[in-house]
Length: 182
Image (tube, rainbow, N blue to C red; front, top):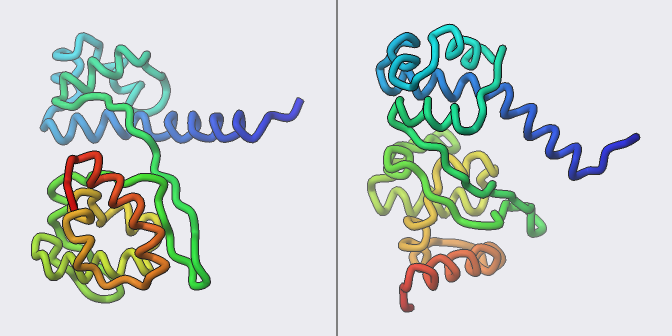
């Protein structure tokens, strides 16, 4: 029996999680400067079981995954995916919602079209965001645009009317939700 598009998408997401699950534990462990034995001990599991999780040979329950990540100083978070739609004659990408970046990414450096922008500098961030909203790929947008910083810069961005109209509703929604009065 053929699966529905929804079932196929879910199966694809599960396959991606299975491949990335081990990497998630390994990244958390390395970020916490722990070896497998130390993390296993603190999280109440064995080193061999943690190794099996990290290498994708075994899958933990959600409770166990949360416990291991917690022991490494992280937490499991449910976060909606950001989906993009292409719009306009010269396509640009518009997300279904705004997102937040970690501070190091939001205020870090962005290499775009053979130039490096210092996102901690408001004027360089303004130039980078203007370029990204006009020409950025979904991945570039996800990597460099922070929803709060975008809302703060919005009135100063140099954007064509069609892009301003498409993104404007998201920015206004974020401002309204944050209690910002225009």
